[in-house]
Image (tube, rainbow, N blue to C red; front, side, top):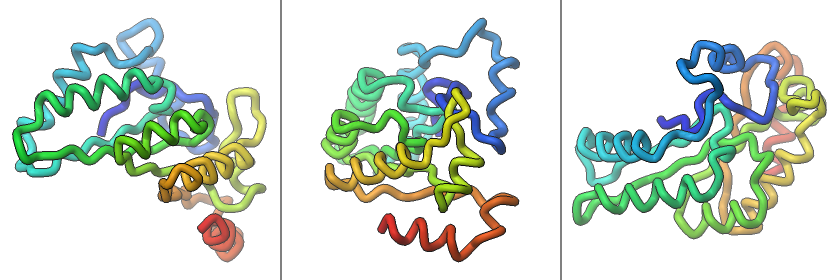
Length: 180
C-alpha cells in the first residue's frame, strides 16, 4: 500500500484516523511523494514480490491529490522494474472528489481497479464525510461512481461501518445496491 500524499486529504471525515497524523510528519507540510522515493518503493516492491503479479494499492489521505502525472511516472517505473512476463495490478482507493472524465479515462486506459468511499445513504455519508468546507460530499461521490461507469470502470464501493451506518443497515445496503 502506497500513500503518495501521506495523510493529506480534501475531506474531513468524522472517523478518520489520519487527520492528526500529518502533525507527526518530519516535513513542514506533506507534499507529493518524491520521485526518488517512488522509484525506490516500486523497485523494492517488485524485488520482494514472488510474482508474476505485483500489487500496488494507492491509498491516502486522498491519492488523487498527487495528480495524473505522478501516476504516469509510477506506471513508467513499474514497467522499468517488472521482469519479463510479470505485470502490475494497480488499485486506487479514493473519495472520488477529483475523479473527472480525464481521471476516469486514464484509470481505464491503464486497467486500474478503483474503489470509491461512499457511506451508504446521502444523510449518513454527508454526516460522516464532509469536505474541508464542512459541506456534504455525497453527490460528488455518486458522480464519481457514474463517471467511472461511463468510462467502463465498475468501481468497488467502500462503506465504513460505524455508529451512524449501523442505525439503518437496510437503507445503507439499498443505497449502495442502487448504484449497482
